[in-house]
Length: 74
Image 1 (tube, rainbow, N blue to C red):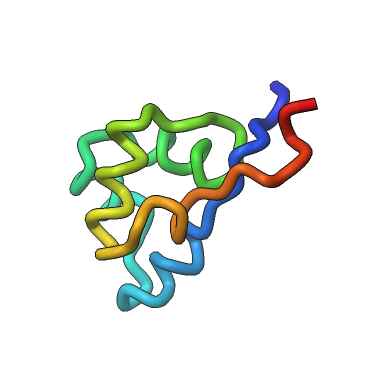
Image 2 (cartoon, helix red, strand yellow):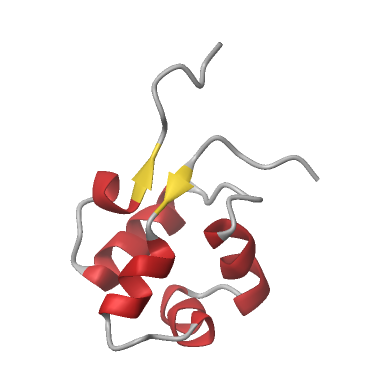
């Protein structure tokens, strides 16, 4: 499976949020732990709605959680 160009800081943010588990975050945003694991590992891109939900859980703006690196469009 090819990864996505979208990078994220979910793992770091989970650690900073009292070491929140993937399962706990997944439950809060309404997905399975496996889905969250794939997003965190950059194997799957979240929908825009899910990306906003994840950012809201951490109280962060979307671009603090997810990044699309310059040069990824070529």
